[in-house]
Length: 400
Image (cartoon, one colour):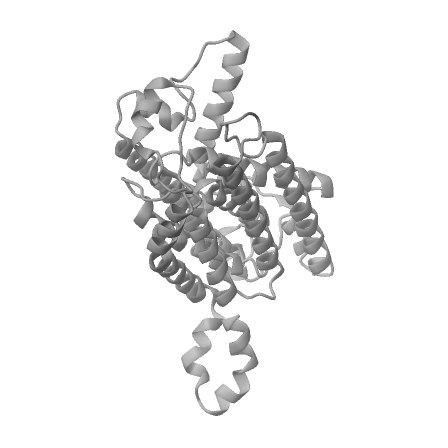
């Protein structure tokens, strides 16, 4: 919104020699920094009153696991308010509306992704806390099939729109940028020819260009998988919020690079015009998650719940799809991948062996907790691993 206003008022501001004071808002990197600070400030300012409101509504968590030892460790978390994702998503949305270019197609789709998964998570949390759908006294929320269907529907729509936007916008481009917007970007492979200077480089003829439905299928896997993986990670004070702060920061950098032609060519990664606006949204995620950690660090005063985790995971998956960095998401979001894989292995092995388990409890952060690590040790060590993975992933941009 601010960028649009600056562009509209450019002539009168220039006439009165005032444009030089606001021209910085035309740069996505500055607006990304401002979005980070603004979303952090919003969560910090509204955090306590939101927690009081949630307590007044008696929206408290009641964690229950199929493990007596874990229930004993987690009993102190009873009645801590959940649905704190309202704070996170609200801050991201407000910062994006104010500081991102609302004319950008990618920002519009990102806001749809955020709002849709926010509402799915909100409804799921609300059902868990207020209804007894299966039998009196149970609080199961949305059925797994219902939740998955809503996520799949969103991913299909986003995949189709992103694919057609890339094809329609860049089809006539002499450099065939439409091929790059739907290409499979693999680690260590060059997206551009490296024989020319960055300004003169051309898309590599060896690009693996995806067809429409292959692209949509990949989008479904990334957005749905990422959304559920973050949801599984949200089980300890500060774990999901801190890890997502690191992941979102890395993707803010990647989105900015992808939207800058010279930098994209220099680093031989896909150039996606206007995707640098997603750096603003990713930075807003960083600020919102850091602000939430103020209240969610041990001992937590509030949990994000599905309201926040589903939306955060889906949104980071969406950004990865747009900038063609799905495989880097596997590295940067390695903790989320580990959590999801641990659950799949545990469930599969349990069914195959008719009752045996690989881990003491899944997701894997509970396994380490039951193995003797304190909750703070698990969380901080997972943060450290995420930071290392993000650094490694960013370093691979030069290894092509």
